[in-house]
Length: 535
Image 1 (cartoon, helix red, strand yellow):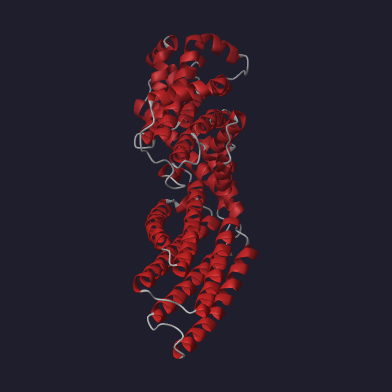
Image 2: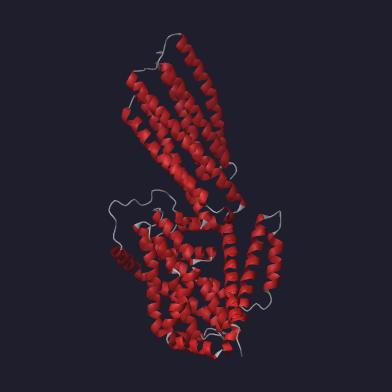
């Protein structure tokens, strides 16, 4: 039988491309549905290996990519949100999570992919319900994935009648190390072990490949998928580099343990199913699960090995921000971590406000200078966070998250301005000390009242942001109204004192400008509280 190599090649490559496109749609849709849940699961990971593995398996199922999970782990470690040891536990779970796709595509669904595509498409264009649209896209993507498997199977089937191809397959079936290298190369090029494994299953559906050769290929796919993580670790922090190395070591050691026993392992796998595609999927699952279980008691040893190979770097700063660029691989995770950074920075500006209060009233030069120094940190954090949020892909966020992303950008501006105004007050305090400016006792009492109320207003707005509590945000808005009333009273009282000569003339500018800056801070608190109400 004459084989059209070009037609077969494009059939396989086109089918693989369609498969990866379907996986991309599925990943993006699952991210919109539950990405924030995955973020919170990863954040709460403890040193317990079982919980860590569960989190890793769940995250990988949602992202449909162990590479994306591991890259995000590198981001968490880079940001100091997770220890290296915790990341290893999650990583072991990601090895298990990646097997779900293989089990799914091993089903022979016949022509059911057409109804899935049709029903999914109709539901995905529903104009009223976002959740129904996401459900439709999920069904649509599953239809594409099964259609892609059919394309690859049909494209590969003529290869079974090619003596040259059969001899090649039989050859590396006898020498499985060759199959491992080929599988690693395909996975490295596609950056997806799931795509490689699904291609192998499609070859099995077309009776093109034997079980031993298929197992060798999927073992290689586990190694090839580490390439992306290794590149990601190059410019990362020391713990993140160790995370990338650990992922590689887990897969290399796992393959090294199983490869000498490939043929006995294949005989065991044959007893788990009658059809070859399911056997390949089962081999993938059994291999990954066993490797993860083997490594549970060896996590400590693996951690120490990576720490020895990649020693600590003196003076290295870990966790400057709550986010890292690798988190952009999970947009919902990235948005949540950016929000946490904004909250951290807002709390820093609240501290600046309190310190500027003390500096102005008590005449403390050291506190005033501390406020001015903190302003640099606030500006740097706000700039970095804004740049980070700008990089978050909107197309992988649901409608609510898209709106919240815009609100967070507005909140950053408010937080930065609070820092600026607190710095202004600290500079007024220095001016007061340098020029010996004094306030009357009643003036001190008034401005202290203003400080106390503004601090309460801003603290309440931050609490509303942290808790997403609408009632607390309303409380902050009500407090801001009280600030406006108090401001008018204080200014009127100040004018009366000035007319009566109770205050130094030089005190006028410092007093009035301080009150003006405090009122602006309460305005920014009001803005933040109003934005929280959109949550």
